[in-house]
Image (cartoon, rainbow over the protein chains, first blue to last red):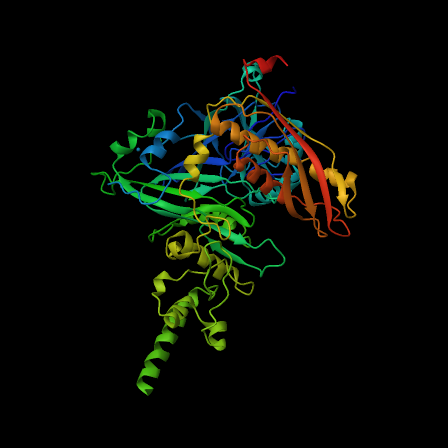
Length: 347
Length: 250
C-alpha cells in the first residue's frame, strides 16, 4: 500500500495539478505528484480596528498527512505580520454566532507594519520566522517572474494558473505572506487530520479579504463553504468586483456581494471576550467612544459563501453600511483597495 | 390627466437626476446567482434602454429600496476622476451596498443551511487512514476517441475519487470497505462529459460517494475532443489501511 499523501489548507486548499477537482484556493503551491483531498471548508475571523486601521486575519488551516514542499501565499495590501494562534477560536465562535440565519444577540498590536516596498530589488524578504508548523516569509516584489523564481528556489511551486494571479498582485504593490509547511517526524506517523490557526495582521483602512483565486481551467465541482466572522465597531458589507469570464456571456463588470450576511449583532466587549481566547481578546478593536468616557458595543457579523467557484470574483473589500467618510490619509491608503474594485485605478 | 403626466414626468426626471451620479447603474433585475435576468417583457422597449432601477421599480410597483443595485466601476468613457469619485462613495458608505446583488451560491442552487456544520463536522480529528486509489487505463467502447490521449484526462480523476472517498471516511469515522468499480463515460464531440455511469458498485457504498464522483467526473474536459461522441470505460480500485489495523500489515 502506497502511503496516502496529501496536505490540505482550509482556505487555500492545494490540489495536485492533475487532480480533477481543480484547486479551490486563493493560493497555490503544490507538487505535481500529490493528490490532496478537499475538506472544502474555510473559516476566518477578522478583527478589525477602524481607528488603528489594523486588521487581524485569523485563518484555520487543516492539515492531513502533510508532505514537504507545500505551502500557500496570502496577498495583502500592506506589510503583514504573521503569527501562530494557539487556540482555535472557530468552534466557540460557531457555537455563539452560528453560521446560519435568524440569529440575534443583544478590545491592538503595534509594530512590524507599514513601510513601502523596500529597495528596488525584484523580491525582498522582509521577514522569515517559524509559525507553528510553517516557515512564514513576508515578501515584497516588483517583478512577478522574479517572485515565481523565488518561490521555486524555496521549494514552493507556482502552478501556471497562479502566475497571472501573482502578477496582478505584484502590479498592485501588494505584499505576500508565504507559508511553507515544514514536515516533521511525527507527520510521517500521523494519519489524523489536525488544524493550525495563523494570524496575518496588516494595516488597511477597511477590512480586506483575499478572496480572488487563480483562474482554473476546471473549476472544482465539489461543495465548499466559507464562513467569516467579522468583529469591528460598525457594520460592513463585503463587496467584490465581478467580471464575467465567459466569452459567451454579456460582458459584466459590476460590484457584487459574494457573501451572505447571516447575523449582525451588537455585543458587549465582555460577552465577546468569553467567546475568544485571551490571545485573541487582546486583539479586539478599541471601542471607546469619541469622548473617551464610555464603551461602544462591538459588532459581530457572520457571513457565509457556498459558491463552488469564485471565477470572475476579485478580492473582497468590506465597505461600511452607514456613511463613514474616509479622511484624506485613509483615502490615500485605500488606493490598493480601490484598485481591487476597479482595475483602472492605479494604486 | 395632463397634471398627472407632468407629475410623473417630474418624478422620472428627478429620479434620473438623482441617479446621474450612478452612471453605471443599469436596469434589470439580477438573479441570486449573479446572472443577469432578462429585462421584464412588461416594460416598454424605450424604457428598457434608459430606466434606472428606481424607475423600473415604479413600473413594477415595487419599493425602489428592494431593487438590486447594479453598479460597477464605470463605463469606459467615464473619466478617471469620475470613477474614483464613485469608488470613494462606495468605500465611505454612501452607496447602499446592501442592495448590490448577492451571489453566495452557485447558479440556481438554494442556500444550504446545514452545509457549514456538515463540512466542519467531518473535518478534523478523525483518522483518515491511508488511502490508495488506482485508476486503470481507459478502453474505448465506441466512437473515435484516442485512448492514449483520453488517459491524460481520466487518470487525473483519481483525485476526484480519492477526495470523495475521504469524505466518506471522515463522515463515518471508520474505514469503508475497499471499492472496485468501472466507470463508463460518454464523451461528447466538444470534449465535455455527457454522462457518467458506474458498474460493479459495492452494496455498502453510500450514494453520496457516487454522486460526488459523478459530479467530479462530469467536470472533466477531454482535449482534443473526439470527432464524434465516444464511450470510454476504465476501472477504479480504492482501498484503505487504518493505522493499527491488521490491514496495515499488508
